[in-house]
Length: 259
Image 1 (cartoon, rainbow, N blue to C red):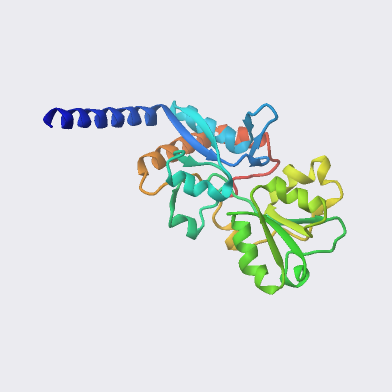
Image 2: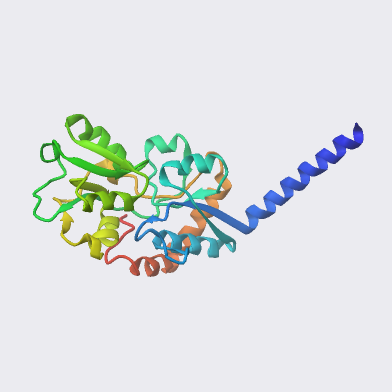
């Protein structure tokens, strides 16, 4: 019995050492690669986008390897809790509801949300204008929560999708009257692409603290202060060195940090 207990303890110690060594050599980021220009899956299977570049820069600063784990957005917090990955880097806003489940890094960037509809639709992002209409959102996003709480009770049908690409497909085929998403994502990921022809932003970007006040940050498991602090330190260095602005300039013509 003593020998078995000793062997079991040794095995646990070995597992602990291996896990610690892995944590010192890599960061596994959970990502939903369907949000251009933030995260995109290329035809060859590689991942690109501002979030990907930013994550790789953080890993380089920490001298660790970046590992990207794909996960649909609506399951990304459960995936983090299940230890499928170490952190979430996928355009996630640290809302009050999410902060109850996840700890967050410092703000990475900010930006308003807006609706997209057919050109000359005369739609506006208001209850009065959208009454009787159908609006598409991505599951698990702050846009979904906003649309369901602000528009949904007033005869506006809200349809939720697993990915942003699915939203745009139904917008194009006429199942949706409008789509609500981050304005930057809608502009670069849809309106500036061939499939966005004939569509435009409808009305002005939505100024509401439920959509704008939180910015975007990296999510880590509750209590993982060591990783959160490492990420914050690396991000601060990237900002101070000018590398952040250099990366951002490849995607945006304005200050995406917004603070």
